[in-house]
Structures are given as C-alpha cells and as structure tokens.
Image (cartoon, rainbow, N blue to C red; front, top):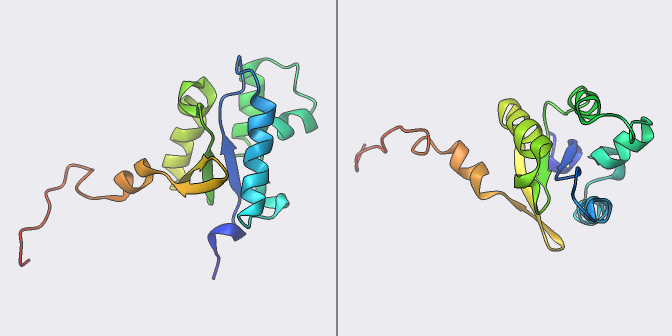
Length: 135
C-alpha cells in the first residue's frame, strides 16, 4: 500500500516576476519535509531549473523541461500567489487535475488539502443532481 508521502509532490507557484520566489519555494520544501515527505520526492521546480542549467533559458524552454518531468501521480502543492502565475495556474495546475493528483496548499508552516480538490471530487460539483432522500 502506498501512502501519500511515498509519492512525489510537485511544488507549484509563481517564479517569473515574483520577488522572493526562491525563499517561498525553499520554505515550501522545508514544510513538506517537516510534514513527512522525503527530500528525494519533493519536486522543487526552482531547484530543477537550476540543476538543469536552464536559469537563463526562455520561459517556454523552462516549462517544456518541467512538464517533461511532471509527476503523473502524487501531489501538487501550491504556494501562496500561485494563481497569478502563467506557468502554475495555466500549465501545472491543469496538468495536475488531468492526472488526478491530490491538490494541497502550503498555509504558513503546514500543508492542507485544497478546497477545490474536494469540489472537483464531488459529483454534485460536476453538475449531477444529488440523490433524493431515501435513495
């Protein structure tokens, strides 16, 4: 049996034109590690880009590299401000939903399941009618 913390977790957040992004991604890495994920399963895109020598590459080249390594199971963990990011909101989050990843958020020094994760799993949220009482 696999547990959530035995699967990869990809950190999702704004990088381009986001002052302080390195500190936010490092904070997220530390929080995930303190919450039980092993460092080898925490996918920090900032570290991935640097390790690949792509820090001076164009945005599209960096995203192509990250998408090619995006986990197809596990968890997407969003950091504050992710919604304003073209890569996080427009590429990584939709991929996570497509693959059925668990969606979490970094909130302070903890990790919480995201509200929209539950909405996406609810048949009523998908437009289905709720069963009548007694059915």
